[in-house]
Length: 205
Image 1 (cartoon, helix red, strand yellow):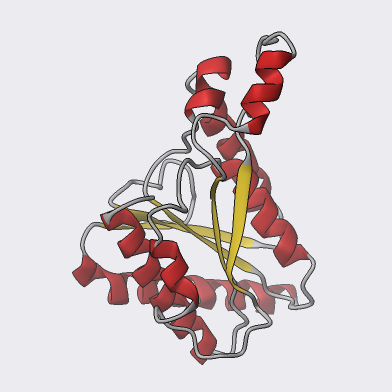
Image 2: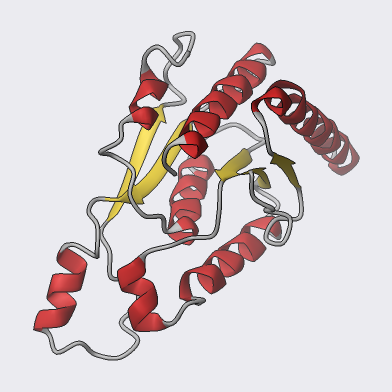
C-alpha cells in the first residue's frame, strides 16, 4: 500500500485495535512488504543459477511487527503506527506468506479465541515473481492459504477491503470506500463477528 491506501489502513488499524482492546482483547498489528524492488537477492540468486523455469517467489520478504500483543500501552497513530506511513518502507506484497506468518504467531499464543483481521487494498503483487511464474501465481497461493485457515477451527479469519472487493477471497469481509465509513464499518464487522464467534464457542462447550 502507498499514498491514500496506507493512510486508510493506518486509521482502520487504529480503530480496530482500540475497539478490541476495550473489550479486553490482546492485539497485534502486523505488516508485510518486500525489502526491495524488483526481487532483490532472491532474484539475483535465481539469475546466477541459470533462471530455472517456475522458480517460485523471487523477492525478499519483510514482515513487520507494528505493535506486539505484549505491548500494554495505549496505541495511537502517534507512535507505533506512524511507521506505516514511511514512504520508503512499503513496496510490493506477497499476501499468502504474510497470512501464514501472522497465523503462526497467533497459534503460538495461549488465548482460546484467535481472530485474524486482514486489511487489503488489492491482489498480491511482486513483478519479479509474477513474470517468472505467471500472473496468477501469488493469487492462487493466497486462495490456498485462505481456504486452509478458514477451515481451521483454531482461528477466525476476516478481511476489510480498502476500496477493493475482498469478498471474492474471504468468506467474511467488508468493503470501505471512504474515510467516513471507517468507524461504524469496522466496528460493526468486528462486533457481529465476535458475537458469532462467542455463540459458536458456547455451542461447542
